[in-house]
Length: 433
Image (cartoon, rainbow, N blue to C red; front, side, top):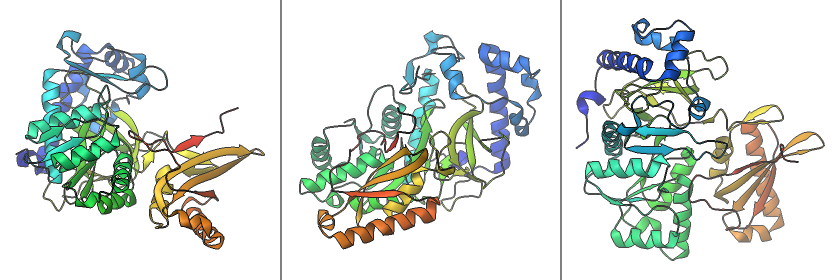
């Protein structure tokens, strides 16, 4: 069993002593082996021996995604390429991808951390786990695959797509754990119902959802549809992949593996460190990675940290659900809007389904927010008064949350695009000519 009680229930003092030793070793190593960090340290007169306590972490400059792109592909490696046994990369939709390398030791730690994370949720070696993430340079599928195998669970590496076959194999194999994005899990449930299969009657009992943000309302709908415990996990390729943090069975915050990563929350505008409980941008420092250690990486994800012990008994810090990304935030009519706010409102309205599309336009030099939403029952579209009442209800609830007005279009079921990977629900047309 991957229940590392001596670590996961360690005292704060003991954990911080371990973190400091590992941080100092990491800082010394990157200074000696990564020219990028050596130049940066030297330019500010900072030496590894200046890091005498965890409070000194704030003296180290941030690393950002562009630093990985600038040093593409191998510039940030801390070991020779012949010691790298695996390469992963981001999608690279805007320019070069961010490339990360793993040594044999890194892969061992990664699989153990994912095994530890899934055990927190209640997954056991007797489970049959269906991985419906896309395989490839994306870290999600391989991270969960090796972690679940390390635990001893049976893995079904089906990848994404061919959703009817996904349902057939889920039924025939008796899959008990589903690994996917929340949006794809919702689509799979929809397809199952079209095939005359009640998703809640299958053997699934736990959902391990990640790769995209989700709201509590979305997870609640997934639990209802599938009859499962819907859990969330967090990771990003630049730091490791999945396994950085994840829900335990209590689902009151995702436990961060603090024996391998030091988290901070900063003000995204000033870079100043914020106190526990205050929402801001998550910054992560790796303290055990060999291939590509990374110092104070700005994730752009908005969350907060809770250092109180969890009811499950673990003392590792918990991060709250990611509220959005600083680079995903929409500024509409001068107001900051996160897509997750819109999803939270829509998921609480029973007459509409979980599929929607956000469009931002500019008309007469003014921003216009338009949202296309599928109704759950096509009959609603035939009753004008009911349709108008529903539109007004949605507009009012959105305005209460967003503080701006939105145009609401209700469309027939099955008309908006479905996603097998990360959902792309926002179309910003303001920059288009």
